[in-house]
Length: 163
Ligand SMILES: [Zn+2]
Ligand SMILES: [Zn+2]
Image 1 (spheres, rainbow, N blue to C red):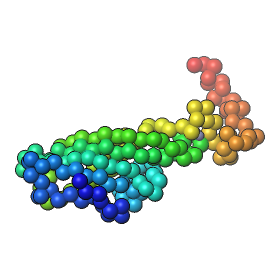
Image 2 (cartoon, protein in one colour):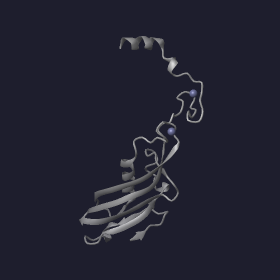
Image 3 (cartoon, rainbow, N blue to C red):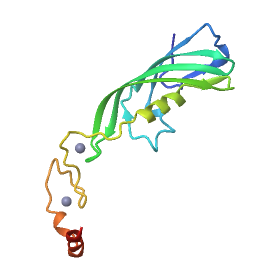
Image 4 (cartoon, protein in one colour):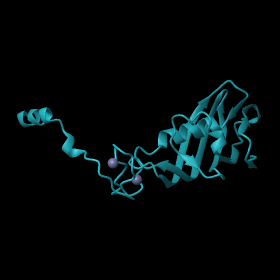
């Protein structure tokens, strides 16, 4: 069992693995690691990062079984008002890795795991009123005088009656 440095990426030297010896690893996946996720992934973690724990072992030449869990708190923006919502997360990941490389970075699989488990829609509360689409005010905290429903084009209204 090794514990990787918080600041370092988790790199495993595959050439050192033999069939009989599973390699256990524990490390913390931090926001700094999230470089390739930055654009598409909406989650953000606290400074200590996410706890990653797992095992990798060799199945045959160039083929490795990797199993791990990712746990921790991930913040996602509320789908309506964008407020950061703390989601207690626990994911399991298992895959067969085929590679000719001498080492692999576990980050690649942690990123994959985070992507496929990203919640489709997070709400800060069930009845979140969201932001006013016109002035952007947070309707949970304040009200505005924007008229939204009454602004339907009368021609569209006429069309509606036909449907
Ligand atoms: Zn909300
Ligand atoms: Zn408004």
